[in-house]
Image 1 (spheres, helix red, strand yellow):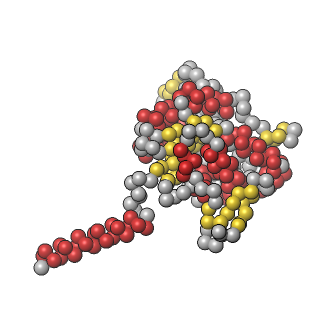
Image 2: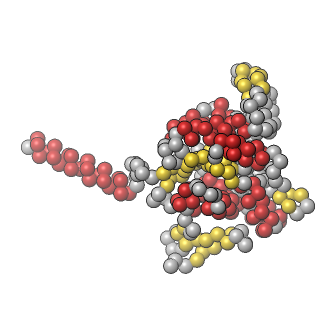
Image 3: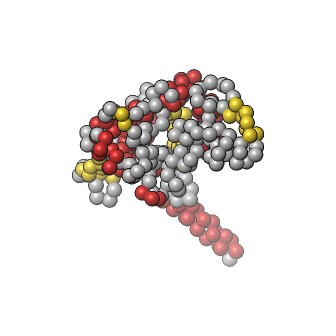
Length: 292
């Protein structure tokens, strides 16, 4: 009788384990790649649930990937700079998630200005991509800290990913809803340049996300971008429609990368229950099209 009960118990364990595997619950598929995202609130706002109507592009990037092949882990956190993502231990935890063959997308810069040691949010990095440092006492903690350059922190993230056998991709920071003479203000001479330099020095892929998104905004026009993509009175954070535009532009940027296999995990359209959706770049909106 005991042998029979044991056999039944083993059979139940095998059955439920198999069911969990098929349903994709509890037990992730071991051969599924990870796409890990690190960055600030423009990548993930709040807890990533659309609080206050704010959405980062990382929250909707999943619409463009084949989830049977790859899993997105959005490990960005609002308010973080390239420096504080490092000093708060967030990178250490994200790095533990990376395996050989995974991908790492990084985007920082919006919070790398401001105070370095004083004030209630001392998070600035040194402007540039060099190896210089500044040492001081952080007012909020009373602790000594050695601060590095923006590019230095990016190079640490790149090196850590490469050491794990993962594939790092550096993005220049997504632009704000800031315009001058009918054109989006870009970061070409500062953060974009430093991000590009860090990627080139470290052998990482680079996407000029700042310029690609700026071009898309200019196609739509300043008034439409402000009213349709961003939260009103907030030139940094997008609503869901804005996040979807940015994510669609990023997907195209990934497809344009040379020798980067992440493009193999993207899909051209993505279904809901009744429709497939396709991004109309001319209009800057998502459109429903009939399923084939």
